[in-house]
Amino acid sequence: MAVGGSKRRADGGSRQPGGKGVGSHEPPAVPNGKLAFTFFSSSLHAYHDVQKQILDAARDLGIDGENFFALRIALEEALINAMKHGNRMDPKKKVHVETHLTARRAEITVEDEGPGFDRASVPDPTDEANLHKCSGRGILLIEAYMHEVTWDRSGRRLRMIRESK
Image 1 (cartoon, rainbow, N blue to C red):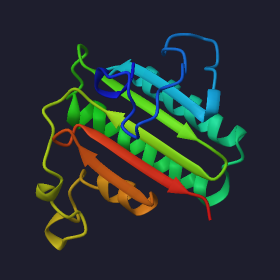
Image 2 (cartoon, rainbow, N blue to C red; image 1 turned 60 degrees about the vertical axis):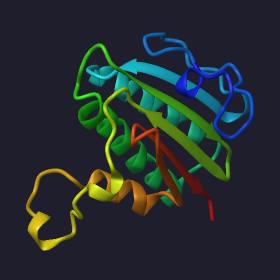
Image 3 (spheres, one colour; image 1 turned 30 degrees about the vertical axis):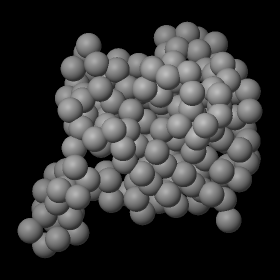
């Protein structure tokens, strides 16, 4: 499924057949570094499976060191935020993930089916009043580790890019 139900990618290119759905035990095909997943938000097993397949593909393409670390942290935060804050762990709602990976660039789009949010209204977790709160750091980590981060569709879709040095 293309993001937003369209057969057209947000970047204007057409989507190549990507990964198998979660639940399949076969590794996904990675034509042109593209993978696509849809999984139920309440399934932590599915989230871990998606994360592992994306990171395995990144590693196979030679993404390593600080780029791999940054990708791992941002991907984990994005998936958890989509399940927990976006879909509110509603088992009827899904998370859609698309990736385009090369040895020099990782582009990941994560979209949930929740109500969305206004990025500007999220409290700054580094503000003294928020330092002891248990949540609120995921967006900060995503924006710190990725080189480009955009939120659209009322905050339901995150697009993040990491370029290798």
